[in-house]
Length: 407
Image (cartoon, rainbow, N blue to C red; front, side):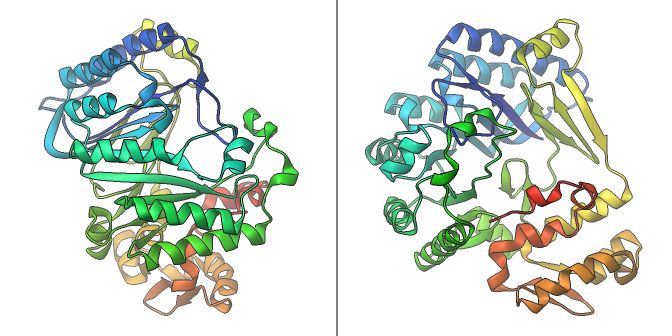
């Protein structure tokens, strides 16, 4: 199993954030939330059949998981251990805001069993930080990295975002220099999706401060060039890792997988997610929890799982999922293997998609022959757009043009 816990609380708001979050300084709210997380853990585990319920992956995300006090962190991990067995050598990760974490907190996280850390930076440029209301010094970030290494964390990842207001090619280049000097094991560089109609905090970002699409593409190209020159492997879809990192090894061995938390080496895990808005994946199904605290508490008080929607994948969904996984994780697709596994004639089944890909072939981004679809080196930064060609739901969405602006 893989477990995900959504901790929605944050002390302050970052304008770019599209996560389900609650801005508060009241720890009474998190104390109540943890009591209900324990209820959900007990209820969910009661539906699992016998055995130790072994867990190979665990992740705390948010919000800001380190909003929790030390006592609350111990409480949540203790509740988890009551119902699940975290195996030795598993991947146990947490998202960290360096502005809210000291050395003692990192030491506690190591004591609780966390061995991987994702550190939010976004950009070190002062103008960008002011524009998105996330002022964070380089010193704060490096102190957390040093503390994680001192407490023997196996992997340290840094998260950046390109496309933020006030961002420039030169400024982001300086951020990349500092990140490379910090020598993290992994770096994620996410594309900022500006959707102020959906996410109210983004309305505080001025449209005039946004970099142009061409500038965004240049920033992404610079990031890929700088990171690969520094010896990192471009895993794809925003991620870089050192050659000896488990992600890079898994990609070379054809074992790489992608889930809601990003790239993973555990493709065989069912994912159970806890807390508001979290999404579980069990077999051919996905289910999502309710999004508000009141709904969450009410359902658990009635001894009901706090799920409000779900989907069971049909044969076409499973087929397309396997294709998108292959392209995003390995940059290539064996047509023959898909035909054998799913009993289809690929050229007939995907005639429309293959026709759409011809524009990308002509641009030198993709190569197609009788046996393989391969994403060429210059197309790898656009693997998200290439994969979208096979997404039936985006095709059916009349507003898909909003989502296809991937750069």
